[in-house]
Length: 401
Image (tube, one colour):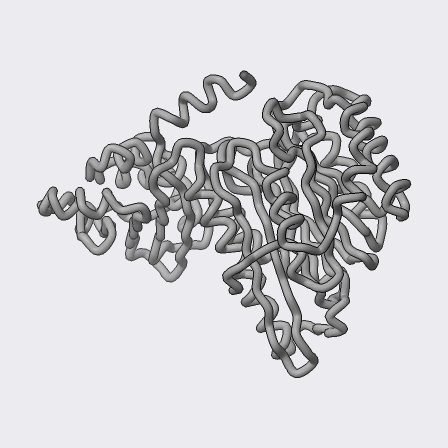
């Protein structure tokens, strides 16, 4: 991956982020990521039955239209649970932007993130559209403004980029993401936009994104909440001139690069969990089925007792054993081995004696690994989470203030 990552790294993409008045500070709160030429788009969306109005509009468009020019994202307001007005507001934003940018309203996708149940200040947003279009550019500076504009409780930027060189030419990929709280598998309070100048068929682009999302974005849990507005979108404008077919050498290179970007962004989301001080990677090895492996990693990653113990640097590993026990997975508890980093803490389902100072040293690191061997089959899974701290409660106890 490239060191200086920004969303306009692929050919033909432009972006910006401006302040329209959604955030109480003067920070950017409205992002635009666009292409100079029409894009194919694929997406994966929240599985929450309650969906934000901006998101519902975009899902309908992706399912019915073939190409798009722009993605608009506001932060500070989820545009959710306010009835028909929410759809009308999303349409109005897209219409106002499209008239300034010079494309069709149906070629503009809308996404929102922030407080649920409050109407957006629509007049402020639409009044800012000339400024959005005026400032949009392909520069890294403008791209970084777009990144900042989608952030809510995020404390760090989440950007990644890569390029592949194949026989047909060079293809570039870039991605940004926001997400810090309300993070749980099957989309969470996260939005990610990926841009690429590859030429790829819609169906192949969609199946690839779904497959990669399953083992990256959908393997992050901060707090067990799945929100209503969230998505990962990939925009492909074909400006590299490189057409990639499935099962080709170029496709394997592209898939690997896209996976690396999504994995990097997913890890950054977990590490930036609200109030978090540690990134935790949980691996389950040797489950009898794929589902059993998933249930175990999921249960450990959403256990408040496991996450608070790690925050306190307390190697209370019985909490890990307990979490897999109530996960719903099928396994023999008397065959389970658990490792904290490289330190064995359980063997054949029994707690081991270990050096507490060694355990504390492991738990004092910024990145911590937990490995669980079920010794019951050939299926494995992995998920990322973070510790629970006092700051998580503080942040979420006053989110609207």
